[in-house]
Length: 380
Image (cartoon, rainbow, N blue to C red):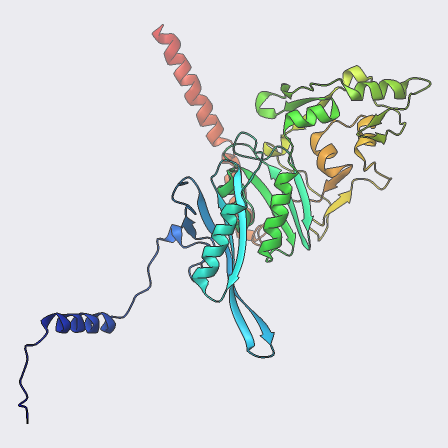
């Protein structure tokens, strides 16, 4: 019978065993993110950044728009759950891609959606790399989106998903209102991308309608600023000349006949298309009392409005938003309502006390300016 002999202890094995025991004993903690990196809320990944989708393109950034659990009932497996991810990728210079994917694993769904977004990149036209060219209105399924370009420094006042899309595509100043289904993020994003595709540059508008695109703003004292001029012959002047003549000729615009209507003025005085940014600098007028904030686009008057571009142009309409988007209609928009405490006795008394100081800042600024001017002339 052989004797049992004791062998040398394998120290490397014992070291690996002790290291594994120590790792398993430590409880894993969730990675804590900075408040600015937590996305829309602290307990979901919506709005968080995933970084660049490809190492060769560091200028791109990916954002999670929606990450949720979906389920389908099957006959064999019962309730089959999966993760659904909606991710957008952009470089902030007019290039954006959207991707959606599903998987039983959350990481796999995010990875697939990010890769698909990088493969679906499209280019969009942006005015001055900061805002839209003109007002946009689109309806996607049960979601209605109404977007207005704003002046520089206004910021993004819109739905949080639209704000994320705007930062990825490069839009910095815009106001947008989403009505209807605002929680269906996929339809909201698709509708907004459709709105961006409908944007036309001022040169394209000038070439299409044969008009000069001129901007009037109050910060320039309503001085006309020519943004684009048509490269082709002015079709609108020929249309109005034929309408003013006794025997008009058969003229078509974009393959459609133009109705004969009485023009407002002589065609030589109406050969421009106006771009007015007055709402950016002045307050909106008080709207009519209504319980609906923005119920699609409503008729401006009770009479039949001209809804085709040819008739509007022949009638003398030259406002860019009216021709491109509204087509004889206006949006029903009202300002933010006053707070509940506005007419309380204490608030009314405080407003009356502060009424005498309403122009105090302007007067102090004017006095400081005159003081500096007096010092300047005295030194000379």
